[in-house]
Amino acid sequence: MTLRVAVLGAGAWGQNHVRIVASEPGCVLAGVADPDPLALERIRGVLPRCRLVADPHALLGGDVEAVVIASPAATHPALARAALAAGKHVLVEKPLAMDVAVAISLAELARSNRLVGMVGHLMVHHPAVIRLRELLRSGVLGTLHYLHSTRVNLGRLRRDENALWSFGPHDVSMIDLLLDRAPISVAARGQSVLQQGIEDVVFLTMRYETGEMAHVHLSWLSPRKERRLTLVCSQKMAEFDDVGTDKLKIYDRGYDRPPEFSEYSQFLTIRDGDVHIPQLPMQEPLRLQFRHFVDCIHSGAVPDGNLASAVRVTAVLEAAQRSLQQDGAPVGLAL
Ligand SMILES: NC(=O)c1ccc[n+]([C@@H]2O[C@H](COP(=O)([O-])OP(=O)(O)OC[C@H]3O[C@@H](n4cnc5c(N)ncnc54)[C@H](O)[C@@H]3O)[C@@H](O)[C@H]2O)c1
Image (tube, rainbow, N blue to C red; front, side, top):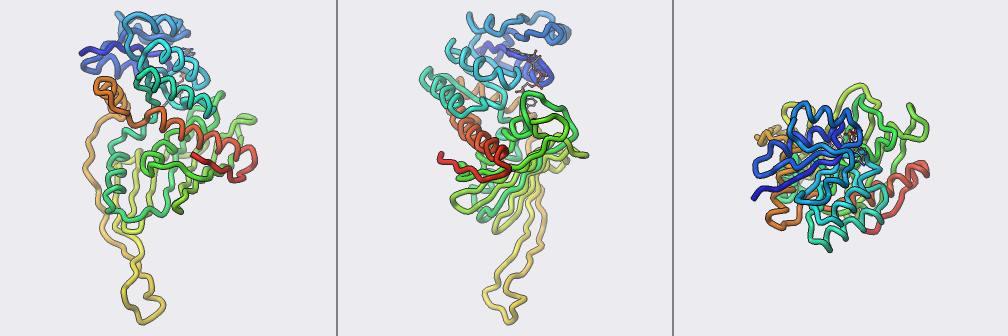
């Protein structure tokens, strides 16, 4: 069964989607749309026979079965809506929308039209994150106390999104997958250094009904690239470092409570045990994400990174944006 897939938006990131779709067995790249002639020229250079159009709507008719949307954030809701209304399965880049009501209406449209809708929450397809989810669910890490995530670098500035909306979907979706529940309150503080009114750095805190806490540091104004998630649990601690070569480390470290002790200083003893580095399959998360999208189209399964989980992510980011505007006042969530 060959799936005909079009890519809408072929800029810096969309080119990667074009490469993946064009080289994925069982798929045909049915066309690429981008209003920028230079973007289309670049694609023509590598795929001379590909159908190239300026207007994305030109690819929403005919025999295209699925679309990947990699246009600027502000265009995602309208393009996703048009594609779903035209009966196409949709993989849309993050953020799905910057308004939770819009995200809900898109999730509802996909559901009622029986179409696969997925958001490019890339991290939920990363083999290290999937392993972390298995470890948490199996209980080997013990009870989760808190998570800390860092996504910083000296990188591309965006004008239409702040660091919260540009980077935050990755961390919030990853934490949503691991915890499988939404926070009950969110607080965020940030700073606009380079462009007035657009936060380059954001510190986001999420609290959960069961007591856990998650903290996320997002910035494109930082000297070093860091992509790190640390889980501190009662039995073990785990660290996912997406920049390093050893992506995942499990630390047998923590505090133990001996059953008996004679001095108060022995009430809690430090356990400084081994560090285990699990073997992980070396596969490109963007390809795994696309493959998952295709598999769900064929099987009818509900994907990881589906629109319902994207609604939760949008709700968290929307609440965080409100908190940012109130200089970090906690904002409650009822999801
Ligand atoms: N998942 C990830 O890790 C990741 C990484 C980078 C970017 N992204 C996301 O991908 C999206 C695109 O980012 P980018 O860095 O490629 O931006 P970009 O500005 O480099 O490219 C966007 C492209 O979309 C085109 N475009 C504009 N309006 C369009 C429309 N209506 N229809 C089709 N194309 C249109 C532009 O001409 C441009 O070529 C953003 O939402 C961004 O957040 C995701």
